[in-house]
Every structure is written in structure tokens, then in C-alpha cells.
Image (cartoon, rainbow, N blue to C red; front, side):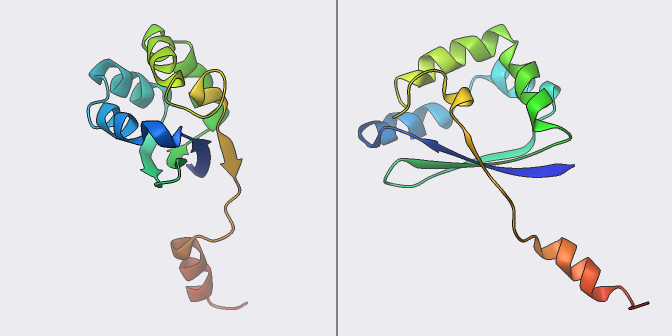
Length: 115
């Protein structure tokens, strides 16, 4: 399963609202994300509005398309759009950040006997 880092931008004037809404994400959206293939999905929010997401998926493009096709996601994106500093649906504004280090993977490689 691949790991992905995503960056978004919440309106700094709306941080408290963003935190409040995400403390109670709609249960039907949680199920839609899970069923679409999102795993270990977490969001981290800095005080300047920088939003960092971490997710694991077999194929994030496919998982995003599957959840984007749900009615609950369309409603959620419409509700969240006003909290973001970007135009359009927030789930379409994610920037992907390439991974350059992963501890367990390098430990496993270091522990392999040299051939």
C-alpha cells in the first residue's frame, strides 16, 4: 500500500471552524472514504492555515475518484469550500508531496545481509 502526503490551504481566518467541523466528520463520509480505499487518513493543521494530509491507498487516484463520485462527498466539499483559501472543491486542490524517507523501509534494507 502506497503512502501519500497532501498539502492544502485553509483560510487562516476560519481555522476554528475547520477544526470544529473535523472533530465531527459526517459518519456517512467516513464510511465512503473507507469504502473508496482510503486508509490511515489523518489531517494536520498549522496556525497559518497549512493543512497536511497523510493517507495510505493502493491507488490514491482511484480512491479519490471513487469517493468523489459519492453524493455525500459532493455535499461535504460544497460545505468545506468556504473554509479554504483556494477556489473550487478542496479535494481537487490538494498538492502531493513526494516521499523521500521512510524509517521502517530503510531499517529493513539496512538489516538485509549484503550479497
